[in-house]
Structure formats: C-alpha cells, structure tokens
Image (tube, rainbow, N blue to C red; front, top):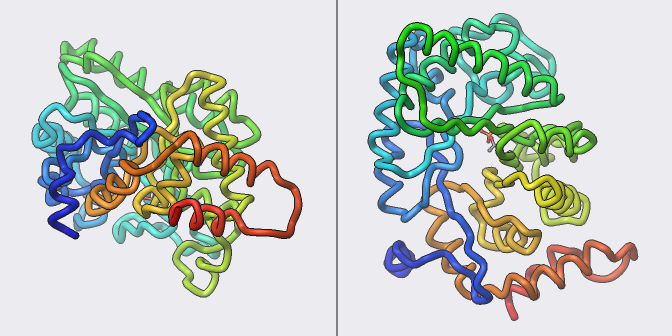
Length: 325
Ligand code: PEP
Ligand code: MG
C-alpha cells in the first residue's frame, strides 16, 4: 500500500466530480521538511513554531528564530508555509517558561493569551517572521483565539513591527496573509466578525473538539467517549464552512481529523476544500478522494445533519455506509 500511495504523489487531488482539494501537511521542525516533496503536499498548512521553543534549553533569540524561519522557507522552495505563532501552555510545555502551576492548563494561560501578556515575546517572533519573509510571502495565523479583539491586538503589534522594520530600512514581505485558528467555541457566536477580521481561518479541530465537548484531548478515558463524526460536531464544522462562504473568507482545517480518510471524507462533504494533516496521511486521503463523489456525499450528509429525529443511523454510520458503497 505504501507503494500505491507513493505512486499517487504527483496525481492532482481532484474528486470524481471535479472538486479540487488542497492537501497540505503539518510540520514543526527541519526534519519534517523533506516530507514536503516526498508526500506531494501542496504546502505546509500548519507550521507549529513552538516546537523550536520546546526542544531548546533557553528561549530562542530573535536571530535564531529568524534563521530558522528562513531555513524553513528556503527548504519549502516556493510552496506556501503557514506559520502559527507560539502555542505554548496547555499540552505544550516549554520547561524554561512555566511560571506557575495551573489547575486547568487547557483553560489557562496559553497560546495567544500568553503572547498578548508578553508582547515582547510576540513582537520578537513577528519581527523574526517578517524578516525571514522579506521579498516573499508571509502567511501566519494565531492559535487559541477566544475573542475577535485578540486578533485586532495581534494585528496592531504586527503593523508596529512592519513600521519598525521599514523605518530601519529592512525589506518587507511582498505579501502578508493574516489568519486565525478557530479552536474555541466562543468564536461561533462572533463568526462573521471573525471572518471579516482575517484573510483566512484554520480550524484546529483537536482543540475545537476538546472545548466543544468538554473532553480533555490527552485523557484517553474521556477523549474517545464522544464522536467527532457525530451530529453536534459536524454541525459546528458545517456552520464554519457556511460562514466562510458567506464572507468570502477561505477556511481550512488542520487537526488530526483531516488525516483520517473517513473523517477527511466527511470534511469534503461538509464543503472543506483545503485540509492540512501529517505527511504520511496525504497518500491515503488522496486515494480516498480520487474515488469520491463530493456532491453526492454533500447531499447525503446535509440531509442527515438536517434530520432532527433521534432514531436511525448515526452520522458516522451514514458516512461509513457511503464510504463502503
Ligand atoms: C488543533 O488543535 O487541532 C491543532 C491543529 O493545533 P494543536 O494540535 O497543535 O493544538
Ligand atoms: Mg490547537
């Protein structure tokens, strides 16, 4: 099967009914980069910048961050890289940074919350990203956004950095794309404001599922208890796709769901046209979508999601049956 998947590397990811799906990969370290060419991924849909911080024994300095991002972009040779700003705290531990114990780390001082409270840290990272992307494109996104105001706060800092660099005669990126991760359910009730505030939205389904269902993603006693292909979560995802369409804002998804053929199929049925996954999943997901009638699946899935009766097949069963047929 490995061989079979490898043979698909240069095949265009287009469904049987002609829908093109952008298949991207997740990465975080230099060792991941060769997979870009090997997997046939179109780009890096999620670059987890905290990994550089997690493996270091001291906080990486501006120059180290810049050199790292520059090396990543060089190795990506023209394929787009979406850098996510620091996502530390919660399940992502940076030993030299934790100031105090928290009772609920997943609900605590993490990701963008921490970055906004330590603007020096965030500004250094933004400066490193801007400098590394001089003359090319910078595509970046912010994790764990809870309120749209946080996006505006990060954008203000980004603009300050742009001004600072241009005042000091540095070259700037030719193009800047600024996005938010949708991982916290509160954004569902400010979704049009969110879509208007950014160039793109990337759904972090690992965290969005954790916070929607109130199940710790790292606790196996509860993490498999509820179904991410069940009605509630699929309806959440469908609402996100619809909000993206309504606002003309590109929407993508970069959680583990994107890398499992059955859930990737469900995502395409919901209308996702871009997904990012671990590089080894690209072959199996591509094999799945080449045989898929996305329109037919969308009809079946939408009918199931609109159905309010509680009896009958679950949405997972409907998806499994569709896949088998
Ligand atoms: C997610 O939460 O789905 C995600 C992609 O981010 P991470 O797994 O790094 O939290
Ligand atoms: Mg996350």
